[in-house]
Amino acid sequence: MKKKLVLRPFVLPLLYVSLLLLLMLYTAKSLYKEPVKEKKDDFKEEIKDIVPVIDEVETYVLNPYIGEDVEEQVGFYNYKDEKEKQEKSIIEFGNTYLQNTGITYTSDNDFKVVSVMDGKVTKIYENELLGNVVEITNDNIVNIYQMVKDIKVRVGDTVKSGAEIATSGTSKVFPNGSNLHYEVIKNGKIENPKSIIGINTKDL
Image 1 (cartoon, one colour):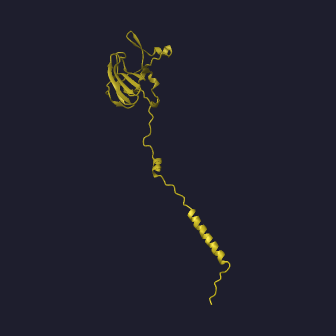
Image 2 (cartoon, one colour; image 1 turned 180 degrees about the horizontal axis):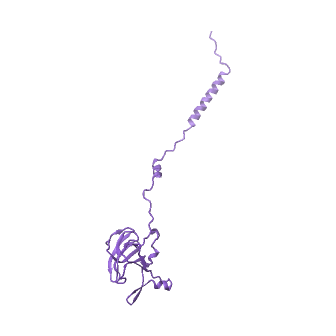
């Protein structure tokens, strides 16, 4: 006669607890998700590392000449100036008195005439009273160089700031010494050259 298998009292509860633990572990594992790693955007990283190759260079309007012994002979006539200063800005030619529309520079020796800023040579011609004339245009500004000789540019040339364009010379109005008469026309209006010389070209 076979013996009947009898389980000890603690076995069933132990089995239940084990099954419950296994079920809990399985549920926890199925619910748990690994955090998604953020994909590195190599392209953006490369952009951050790019260093600009060209730095913007500040440029300023230069004097229209190069020379140590160059002096201002006649200044720009301004109707708002005091009478004494206005008298120094008058050009006497024969029996005629002319209000100076630019600045006239002079020296005992020839000196280089240079472009005060980047621009394009728009005119070269001869004036009966003021001799050879070179006009260089930069957007809304026309720079006019009069009384020059040995002109080194041609109409249509693009010139850089500081480039030599001619040599100082003479004229019927200023027959003595070596001279340069420099004028500025801005937005179609004659301006005192000193209003732009030394100014950042961005501010013109």
